[in-house]
Length: 221
Ligand SMILES: O=C(O)CCC(=O)C(=O)O
Image (cartoon, rainbow, N blue to C red):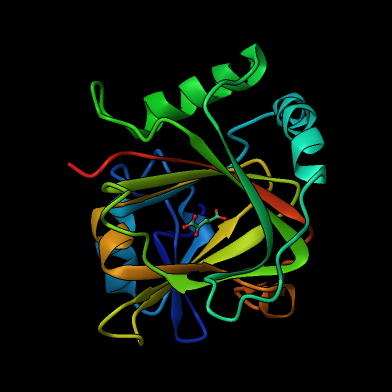
């Protein structure tokens, strides 16, 4: 009989698994590691990682649309006060049919019917040496939910409780996965994307390559 893997302790940290939890069955919880079992469980409903959300063909469709515009921009490295190091970015309202179909699927999974969404989709291209420092998205411009597709590379997103830094979650974001941050996870925890040198999940190196994130947000309510 398979062991109960509902929560697996890993060197003083906890790795949630949906193996025996009906409530969490729709999620890939083995991709979420936290400072305590309680935190993994309590924040579990507000953090999701869905592996294989897009196909290789979908990823290629996004790259075909985005590369010509991105290539004209330079990666930005030297703004000391920026939350992001080694990036270029763009926004896009209109997409070709293949990408629009994926984005419709993202919106239907992430947002309730009738939610007011930020019109343009944010595209963030991180160089292999790039990373995103801990920050909380502006409450002026962004509502309760942030969802992102990861293209080209696996990566680790770290959430740290703003007023209690010993409370943290690491999310392993595999290439072509979708992540979703909601409510407390979005408002009370900083999020960051680790640099290549620090990219280790549950003791295992997760090499960071160039990564493009396609990010959808709702509007403040
Ligand atoms: O690259 C990502 O998926 C996260 C982006 C991010 O942190 C942000 O846009 O606030």
